[in-house]
Amino acid sequence: MVDATALADFAENVLVDVNLPELPNHYRGKVRDNYDLPDGRRVIVASDRLSAFDIILAAIPLKGQVLTQTARFWFEATRDLCPNHVLEYPDPNVVVCRKLDILPVEIVVRDYLAGTTGTSILSLYRSGQRDMYGVRLPEGLRPNEKLPDTIITPTSKAFHGGHDEPLTPADIVSGNLLTEAQWRTVSDYALALFARGREMARERGLILVDTKYEFGVDARGEIVLADEIHTPDSSRYWFLESYRDRFETGEKPESFDKDFVRNWVASRCDPYKEPVPEIPRDVILETAAVYIRAYETITGQSFALPDASTPVMDRIHANLASYF
View 1 (cartoon, rainbow, N blue to C red):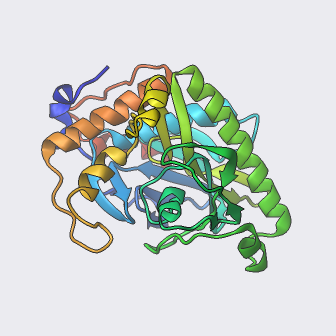
View 2 (cartoon, rainbow, N blue to C red):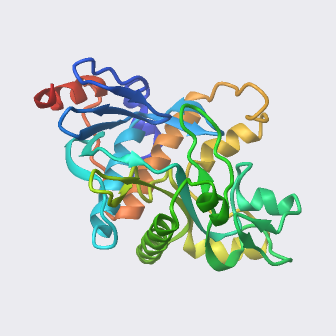
């Protein structure tokens, strides 16, 4: 396992801004930069930016590589359940995929009463709501408790820096965000993907608590899984061994998702209303170690550290030269 002290050489070698002027049609997302090629392929570069509370909080060394390689593991492990957008991986931070028209609904699947954001079911439940996302939750649930059933909590897909908003299935269909057939398809895919992820995570001593999925439509009208799957950015994982004891005593479950940074920020300010303080170097490096430990625990594979002396952007530029 890699610890934070072993990552000191990577502290300054982070990918914040992706610069590939040779590629056309650039679009910068919160974490990923996208380039659409004339032949219908899309080049997606995962940066080291960390997004939470609808803002970029920091840049975490090696995070983009962790996300790309974790998603690669899961795309390959679930391709029998749902078509995905992957074509090839020319660099540890890069996936080349089919260009899709992304559906305007983000699908979040949840197994536990958990979360930290304003749209999380725990936040809404604590505020007194019991009917949310088209689901009614029973009285008497405790924070981090297993839900009676796995549920889908869809939100609007926020484009261009907007905010995700809670939706119900009725909202989605009546608002023409998705057709009824599309909603059934993405729901079925999401539940099947989550069930596979939950099963495989448990074999690794983990609980897959909740996760988000994004889907798009290809040129033939087929619904395809896009973006990422079961990464530390898109999913919440807890450690199975300690969960029961911590739940019984009212402690937060052990986790290695990006709540590590979220909790540091949330304990010092209201990130939705106040400026976020600068995150210290030791927290940044520990977060990088958390991401790497997450990769290794989730996949059962050792993380391949790159050459710290080569700027990550230089390496990506060289590996994508054949696309220019």
